[in-house]
Image: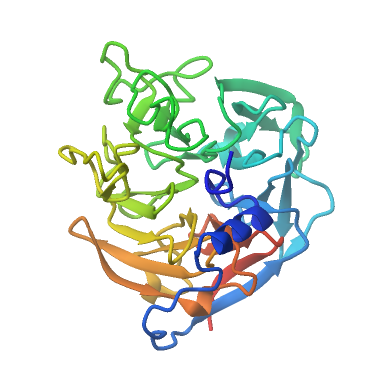
Length: 391
């Protein structure tokens, strides 16, 4: 397995930066022809000293920040301070090599009443597990004995695990899965509706055991297709999100050798084919063979590996602290560390620009996060959490 193949998601700082350097990719923020005028926003460090934070979220109406560490812990930041006791500690139950680890946490929309939460991690064998837990009598601790495996997905290789599970505006649990790994999708999973790999999945956690398949999933009645599939043709959707104001879906899909892409569709994009491995971004993956783009959903934003190596998807800003940012979707690149944003208008990216004032010093943006108020955060591989604030 080459370093190029390992450019799956932003999880291995030393390996990926070395890969970017070795292949002529930028390890500093790209020159976009001059920085735009300064705006009245910046970064405020919330906490540092974490062990590779990869996700941040909050239950509805809860001011606490729950931060997921790749190594297997979920920790709480309350009133600006890191609490000494982890909310959940899965070290020893989680594989952490390559792009593996504890990768995300999702609180049920009715968490305040039912105490249900869900994590996405790779087990000691490297396979994906979606596991439900419940909060204990102590609101600062999940009950480790309440674990219930909801979904198990075998992983043929150690990379391209996807990693995100979150509840959408429809109350369903959405899960992003990679194509299974290696390079070039050797098993053809991205275009195969009969596998859960290389997909965006949508399941109902309230309608059955261990879950129910929503009747309006696009392939629920298709012979040979997995009914959990909502969209397909994905290589490694490390991070995706919904605009909490419009419900529009944004999927940042990590590229192979040339192109990183951000897909955005008005509405949730029912049944979309995002193209992998026929296309990489808007280009044919095998140029010499050509490809038929008919019926494919092409990205609204993309950049090549002269600008970076691994896209980190973010969120549309819908907080109240910075009204002028409303409707702006932010994303980054792990190797280059730039932060860019655009607004989705008429199904296309508008007003796209770079935001140098939002680029953390170590550049390695592993993930974005969103709290219960819609304020946005940047998480870095070096262990820092930053909040986007008015300046």
